[in-house]
Amino acid sequence: MSNAPATNHAARSQDSDRNDVLNSIGAKWSKFSKQELSDLKTNDELITQVVAKYGVEKVAAQRDVDALMNGRNLTA
Picture 1: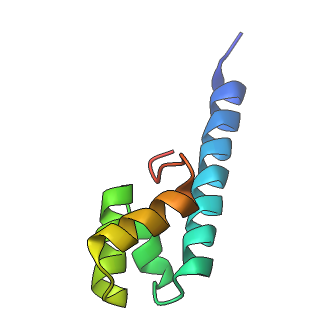
Picture 2 (picture 1 turned 90 degrees about the horizontal axis):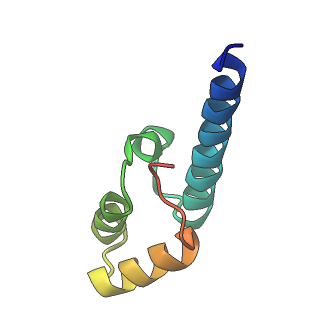
């Protein structure tokens, strides 16, 4: 018996989860291009980019990212 179907399902699920996260980020911060969103690897990178693009303090960016991500990670 092969694990391929389960593995493929898990990979699709992770891709779907990541796409959901990226769509949420893009909806909140519309200055991000699709390429910039897909290049994000960590929540810390997102915070850094929010600070750079929106000129907000890091503490405010951290709070907003934490609220949006709600325990999710970009590396899901």
